[in-house]
Image (cartoon, rainbow, N blue to C red; front, side, top):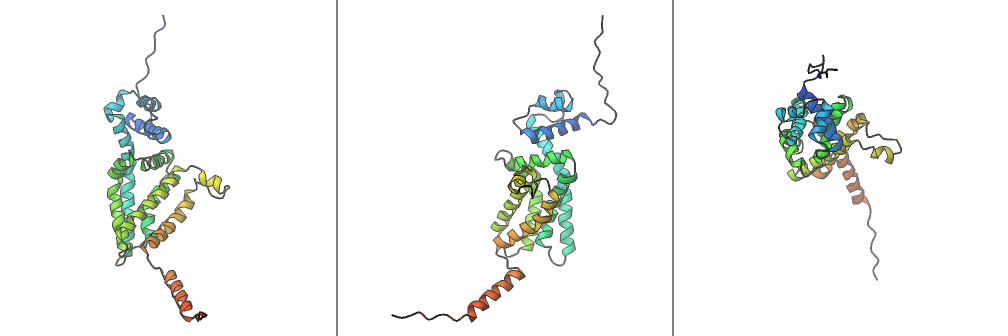
Length: 250
């Protein structure tokens, strides 16, 4: 009579702990299918762990979703904050340029998405999803990113002291919108440009995003750059020196 073999419970050499495997699988599946398109059993099967481990380590599915979000935020946020403080110190006794401020905020994200591996790629796809969600955005983005965003807003206010605060918040809204569509990597720009641009080309995004966003802040804040001042002066001089035609009287 054949004796049924028991499944080995020994962890394979080099294998990640069950908790990390759950987080990895959940991150990948949530990014691909969304919160409601994935069951706890889907996650545990992908992670090759018992269903009970989700409850043991995280509690509910919602708590697991939040844990997935938190894990990499705790790595990213200190790095982004350190970069922001670095550009502020380097600019003393003045203030950093808008380009440097925006770069300190976006570079760690784009760099890890481009070269951090599939886990980071899934994470940023998940961020794009959450940031567009009325259900999750106000909760998770607020909880894990608002303290950093407040420091960014403070730096922008220093660089744009005469800008109405309302416009700085609008500028930030447009910045996060640009990041969201970038992380989604939908391939829309690939087709639209006939292959001239690729949504996966994050190096090109990094090269263009800070100057683009900085110019947007200056525009909506009404900041007059040296180029604009010179252009305005030339136009004013041209108007002043152009003789007006006398209107014909009847």
